[in-house]
Length: 229
Ligand code: ADP
Ligand code: ADP
Image (cartoon, rainbow, N blue to C red; front, side, top):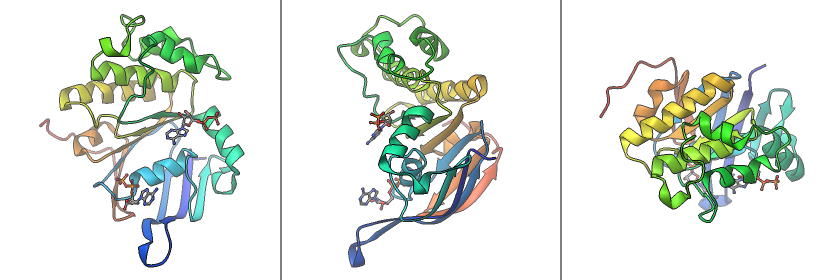
């Protein structure tokens, strides 16, 4: 089974003349352990789809299967359990606790997860074994994002969902963060989905799904490298 099988998915915000049709009939499959980039301009529906796949939002119609689980039929409580057991989230902003060290930020998750890895192991995986006792303010933006990735993977999620993970970083730092996400995908076998409007992100993907106006315009397998800016 694929990790995701999405069938005729729509999401409408609001009603009548003011309605926004954020997703207008999405069909796609995501193989388990793939690294997939959802690429497209702002407002094209990428985050809406990611949020539905991550159990943070409901579709208006259609189906969203996670392996054999029908997420589109889940209650709020079932979605909450789904998120806790299966999903790590990474966002544009790192949302680290400023009063806690890198290790302590990751331990917030490992202390409550069902089968976590050690906080130090997660931080080593993102290349921060020399920053365990640093506070967020003592870390660069790229390092703070790597702590956020360590926090997301420390609960051993099946899925890592990343919404504009390099959006606040310069392009060189962004590339190091993308390499960390690629390494997580390859070393842990985590299915990684990355939402971005930055075309350069696509070169490391197994598959790039191009969005425009709430629809999939094109799907490209194993894209060719994009020249550095
Ligand atoms: P992208 O991630 O590609 O930038 P989004 O999924 O965030 O696109 O947004 C798709 C469309 O849905 C946009 O027109 C956006 O303004 C709208 N939208 C997203 N979230 C909401 C919401 N909570 N309420 C109303 N409209 C929304
Ligand atoms: P629980 O139900 O186990 O208390 P939550 O449902 O609050 O946990 O969150 C589960 C996961 O979803 C966490 O990783 C959390 O960071 C993420 N999450 C929940 N709500 C949001 C949101 N609005 N935006 C981003 N991430 C969220």
